[in-house]
Image (cartoon, rainbow, N blue to C red; front, side, top):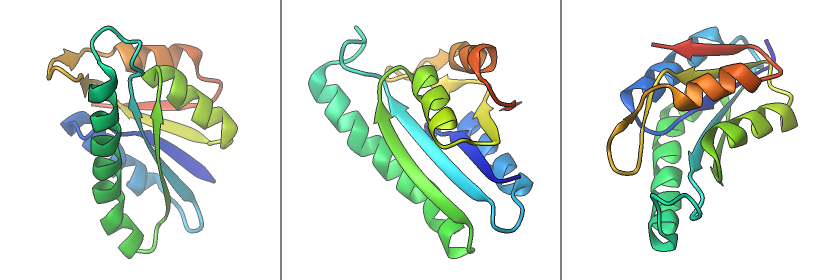
Length: 134
């Protein structure tokens, strides 16, 4: 395959997406795990929330990939600020990923489920294959 990008936010849906991506890897493939923190200009967040969220996102990515690194998987963890779907699409293009894997819903800062808005945007605008995991 080459490389697989997984959108990860610590939700059950993103954990399932990560698990699925791992099963699709072949020898010498690269797994890229990205977590995106909405930028402070999003009305739901303050700058302080954003900084704390970046640290939290980095911690989630680190713990998600720690066990996978130990099993010999070639893996990269990335944390970005910005529009979640836009950043996933940007990284997918920048790193020339062969596949983007995302969960069908994630958890917002206030704990409510974002019912597919990110997944829908990624599927709609991706220039490469996208797998949405339920």
